[in-house]
Image 1 (spheres, rainbow, N blue to C red):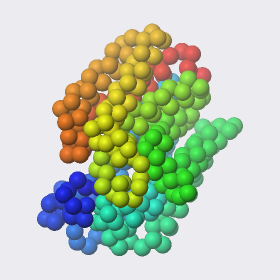
Image 2 (spheres, rainbow, N blue to C red; image 1 turned 90 degrees about the vertical axis):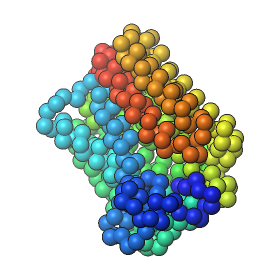
Image 3 (tube, one colour; image 1 turned 45 degrees about the vertical axis):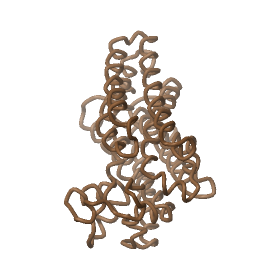
Image 4 (tube, rainbow, N blue to C red; image 1 turned 120 degrees about the horizontal axis):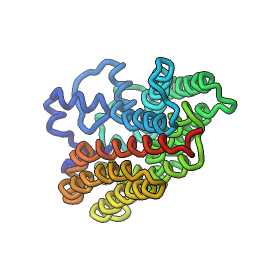
Amino acid sequence: MADNSSSVNSQPDDVASGSEGSKARQLLGMKGAADGETPIWKIRLQLMKPITWIPLIWGVLCGAASSGHFVWSVDHVLAAFACMFMAGPLLTGYTQTINDYYDRELDAINEPYRPIPSGAIGLGQVQVQIWVLLLGGIGVSFGLDRWAQHDFPMLTALALGGSLVSYIYSAPPLKLKQNGWLGNYALGASYIALPWWAGHALFGQLNPTVIVLTLLYSMAGLGIAVVNDFKSVEGDEALGLKSLPVMFGVGTAAWICVLMIDIFQAGMAAYLVVIHKNLYAVLLILMIIPQITFQDMYFLRDPLTNDVKYQASAQPFLVIGMLILGLALGHTDYLVS
């Protein structure tokens, strides 16, 4: 979204210089852009924001681990890769493309160099991309249900449900992203719970315990989603979007963000102690400690400047913690069907 320069219409210094680092960041969907003509396939990839695929791919891995039934066989590995492809490039690509489509007025303020507001791609071409990615994701999910021999097409249902959440997150009249709490929780659940459920359901039986735990874990995902709001405060204020930094101010929103991230991860560690998975609990706590350290070093001191630095430093520990929880659940007998 927004770049935190002195003027919302100015481009970052490295954009003006057309540096290779700027081009790479823009291609991945990160902050920063590059001038000059770009091939259409790169423009389409920009819309899909590949950097955002990673949490979904990782969530599928965590879900496969929590199922307790994944084995290192050729068919299981190929099925897992297909599920990651569905969750990442296809359905996350769909989500990011439809978000850019409906955010084109906001991006014209915050990131005028994005593909749509810059005129690099037409709206008709974007609409085609949205449908291709959506139908491709649903098609792969149906194929995975057939492979898993599901009586009820759970993967297809999750793909359809997740796609609906993506639509109402970005599109009017609901446009959940206009509400800082609802929008960010929808985003957090989409990045943690939904891919986790998909990976778990692919190899095992999705159960209420995993559903509830991952929905709670998604509250930490809400905190992560809030981090992304700090770079678009000016544009959000201009268009009346009620993000947490707009509603509560930058300092208070930063504290809400880090508390959500830390408290709900700690809650997962407490649950592991309750079910006597003490080693996993200790490992998860060890993943939380460096996150708190980076929150103090970077984020709480200046969230507008240090948001990207904080994410790069802290989020690897958060995602490793997710896998620790998944492995713990996969080795809990009463969760294994």
